[in-house]
Length: 243
Image (cartoon, rainbow, N blue to C red; front, side, top):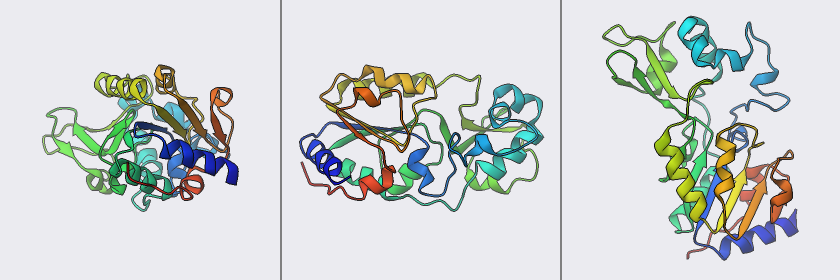
């Protein structure tokens, strides 16, 4: 891996307009399970498959079962930012990284100190009453018994994009602008299997496309640099230098 790390270091050193596009693999090293790996949520057994439970229709029809799964599997309060999150924050602070675009909903990039984080699928740290719109944080949802309810009696919904729901247009537009204007796009910890999120990288017209993922992705053959290793392991070898 040494040659690949050296090449990645050269690409990062030569640019001050980098965008990072990441997925579940960025958070697995923090102890959060991904969805599609051998040990991920899709390979565990429940009364319903996770993709059914995490759909808008299921949420509306079976909120009790939704929240039983959601509180058990989606609300992780022990995870801490890993080397990947920390290095991305350092790159941003050095003026080299312009945006983190993430498919994750765990807030770990913000915990690491990153400022420009575009959350394509929302966040478990934002929750709103469906009746009056009142905001509720992570702790309220984690500690709620049964279906979380607002003081007004309305059901509280996580600000996460469920299956059958569309992505936020403002977040999409910002992500497209960032990717389209980047000189370097680093794709990390994602199989690029979730659409429409994965299609956003089609807007990249810059100099270097870097793909860092343990398993193959549909974009491997287009990458200027391909590293099939855990993203945290790779980034822990990078030295961040000022612009």
